[in-house]
Length: 322
Image (cartoon, rainbow, N blue to C red):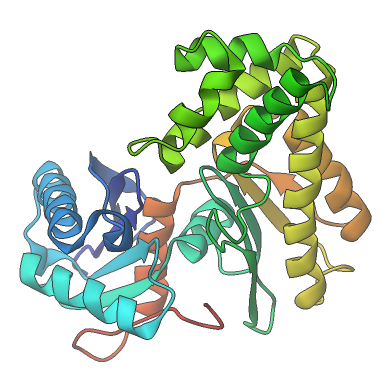
């Protein structure tokens, strides 16, 4: 029997990762390129990143597109049917694949992290969202509303809260904090009064704000009470999103894996501990884990599981997604 190959793509606003997995579940090639969330970087840049990641990973695997059984794409911003159609058209212009399976990045992260489409995932990077699937195949998500409406507990949220704490300390409305010296030095400012001009200027965007989160974490590790309070609150807000998914799917009394991933959670620090403690209250039989594999691997598994069947391109995803 001929070996089957599945190509998985994790396309986000920061980078695009691609992996080729064989029919036995072994990863045989991997590549990384630039961002491919077309909502964030535009259609041309997104397609260029997808094209480069696919080209590199196929070359590394020694495969032609026609030798790939199915390609799975877990794409940030692909929760709606119209978005998935845009992605499908981009991929069709890049190469001729026998089957195309399109889902969103949260499902790819869940499947990669757990190994199957069951359980929950909490992603806390620049943004934040929780997502889950129960044994009946029902899906639920919480947050992921973007930095203006949500993403509570994310790196962006932590960065904003850090600067708000600096402003309060400067005014005398809040306690003194080491964050004042740390964040001002990072931004190249000599006084908190210069923050308004810097933060509201063109060119200071979401990545810059999210980039302050590691400094808040460092201050917390060094014992700053204000920074520790920010991280604990971040953990509570992330746990609230995860608990909403658990309750909505009826998982509270079930045994399942909850994947915790993203830069905010990766260090297994105070935010992780806060989330795990809250998960233990919401679902005592749940196990918090780091992902076993990443979303690119998960997208390949989704392609394997969902892409088998009749010929031609298929779409997958949008199950209850915004």
